[in-house]
Length: 464
Image: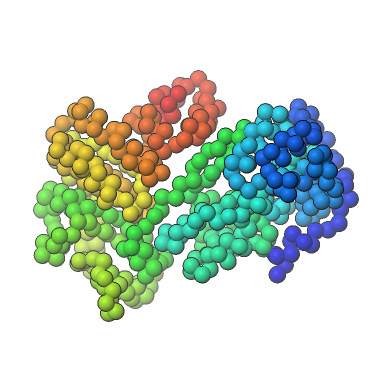
């Protein structure tokens, strides 16, 4: 109950508080290089936002200073600013237009979420424009299978928890201020909260961001690749905390390893016409409990007793350390078997798990008549697909058939051209297929910041 009241139990304050004045003097040198807000700026903001989304004491709004008090002070009343304008955009486009204007006019801006911080980070030092994100509170989409939520920065943490509850999911973060704090502020401070030991810090659960830069450019890195399929959903549901690995490989990969080693994980009669295999590993602390979970999973995958459709044809459960190792040898032996079979074009990409088969098949259709084999395998947990194209020799013809075709397929799924192998010498010219121009420009600036003379590993990663 108390957390819901943070926004309302704001102590009365008198403007300006002396501590705020002292902070303003300490930062005065920086603020003096910037411009103060003028009526013409507010007029321009009114062309971007409806007047109901603007609070200002300046014309043409002519609001009351009292209306700005809750935004000019933190909830403790310790830090107080003198902003004359609060803007409440609803969309990324509106934020972009506002920031572009302020950048060109050199007007300082303070972004503000729920304003529940304790260090004065979300209130003005002086008279900066306050960009309040409370109206950006839409939940864009939620995938109950993968557990991925896409939402605006202004969504209140408790509202997100309440939205997820009927879907049997929870937010990885819980705070005392959950009734007022917003997810954008939580992410910016990397909040730990009450569930830190179970889920880690918040940055570890953020898959992507859509960012408006100070100059108004939008950097779109809103990646949501951990899309899952039905078998993975069943595995997560039944194994939950004991699942430690979930690997995929196609029939061609299995045949390649089997032909190279002479080994078989299953009898041919059991495999039948199966076109893909998954390898699941569990790591629990209670053998009886873990065995019960695995048995429940197998029952569900085989169709159970209620007439559900079977999701697998057959399978085997390791009963000893040697059998455990032999099953892993199939997955781990794919790259070696490919290398022994010819010259390999290797592609390490991220696409939705539901597209693993389709992506591999598209490559197979593209170059199958020119090469010996195309195999696909990878990590289901993070959408990382490895495609190995095996040829007699490396040729320009095959390379031109593959590139940029594979990267175009990746881009169509908003994936990554490099999931875990890096960019190196091979991919700088293809980086734009998974990073927008704004992101690449920032990567270059970071590179120049640490290596202004370009002496460190030149020609790699970032196209300079």
